[in-house]
Image (cartoon, rainbow, N blue to C red; front, side):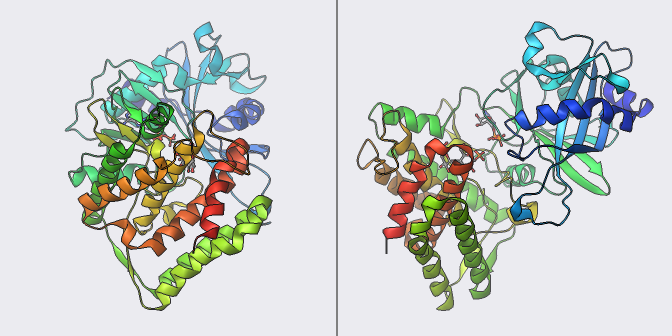
Length: 475
Ligand SMILES: Nc1ncnc2c1ncn2[C@@H]1O[C@H](COP(=O)(O)OP(=O)(O)O)[C@@H](O)[C@H]1O
Ligand SMILES: O=P(O)(O)O[C@H]1O[C@H](CO)[C@@H](O[C@H]2O[C@H](CO)[C@@H](O)[C@H](O)[C@H]2O)[C@H](O)[C@H]1O
C-alpha cells in the first residue's frame, strides 16, 4: 500500500477553509490555463467537489488533489437555466517557498485560511508529486474518493523519472522515463470516458494500433465514477502526422505513402471497434435527426461567424442530399469511432508504425453524445480535411482570406486518394463509394473548423474558409 493511501484515511482535508484560502488565487490562475474550457468568461467562484491530501505525514511539502467546480456567467447559448459549472482536476502543491526551477508553476500566496503564508503551485511540474502519482497507479492505491487501477500484465517500473509535457494540450500529460505517458484529464465529467473505454476495448480486441492502457485513475463520487487519468506506453521518438506532413511539404515531398499507411491504420482501428463494441443501422428517422443536427450547427456557426453566411445555402445542400438518400430508403452502419480524428492524433514510430491517440472525442460535447455509434465516414472526413489543412499551413502559403492556395498542386488530392485506398485495402470498403455521406461529413467538419478557428486562432480562418468555398460550390 502506498504512503498516500495510508495518510489520506487519517487526515481529511478541512474543506471550506481550504477553499477560502485558494479561491481568489484560482480565479486568476485557472482562466489563464491552456486547458481551461470556459475561456472568455470570468470565474466568479468555486464549489469543492473533492479534496484529498496525497503526501505522507511529516513531508515538508503538501499535495492536494482537488476537483473543483468553476462558476461562470452563462453564455447566450446556455440560456438562463442555472448550470452547475465545469468541474476541473487540479494537483496543488504547497511549500514554504518555491525553488527557482518551479517558478513557472506558481499559483500564488494565500492570504487567509489554512494555507495563509505558504506558496501554492501546480504540482505536476514537481517530480516528487508526479512520481507519487505513478506509485499510486503501480500499487493500485485507494485514497479517499480516488481509485488507482492497473493492468497487471504490463510491468510498470517504480524508478521512472517524470517530466511534464509542455505541448499545447486540452489536458496535461506527464512522461515517465520515456516509457509511459500519463494523461491527466482536466475537465472531469462523470461516466464512462471514451479516452479510457476505447483504448481498453481495442487492447482486448488485440488491436496494436492504439497504446494499451497500463493503468488508470478514477474518482468515485456520489455513486458515479469519473475517469481522471490514463497511463499508456509512450511511443519513443514518435512524430505526429501533422509535424511529418508539414516537414514533407516544406521539402516539396509527397506524403501519399504515409497517407495510405494512415488509411490502413484507421481502418484497422475501425474494424476492431466494430468487432468488439455494438454497431447499429441508421435508417430514415435516425438520419433525419443526424442531418437536422448538422444543419443546426451550420446555422449556429453562421450566426457566430459572418464570413460563413454567404456560403450557408450551398453547404446546406450537402446535408439535404444525405437526407434525400435516407428518404429513398438507404441505410448506413454506425459504430464506435475515434470522434476527433486529424493528423495531430496520429503518431508514427521511428520504425514507421502508425498509432492513433486521444479517443476523448470532442471534449465540448456531452459524454453520451461522444459515445454514440456513428458512421466511420466522420473520422475519415476528419483526416481528409487534415491533409487540406496541412497544405494550406506550410510557411509561405498564402494566408489571405481571398486566395489561400496549397503550395504543391496535387499534394492534397494525392493524399486524400492514397488515404482512401489504404482504408479500402484494410477495411474492404472504399469510403469514396459513398460520396454523399463523405461530403456531408467533410462539410460538417469544415463548418466546425470555421467556428473553432474564429474562436481560438483567427489567423487560421482562411484555411477552413477555402474549403467552405469549395464545398459550397460542389454539386
Ligand atoms: N502514447 C504516446 N506516445 C508518445 N506521445 C504521446 C502519446 N500519447 C500522447 N502523446 C503526445 O502527447 C500529446 C497530447 O496527447 P493527447 O492525447 O492528444 O492529449 P490532449 O487531449 O490533451 O490534446 C500528443 O500530441 C502527443 O504528442
Ligand atoms: O487536438 P484537439 O482535440 O484539441 O482538436 C482541436 O484543435 C485542433 C487544432 O489543434 C483542430 O484541428 C484543426 O487544425 C489542425 C492543425 O492544427 C488540423 O490538422 C485539423 O485537421 C483541423 O481540424 C481541431 O479541429 C480541434 O477540434
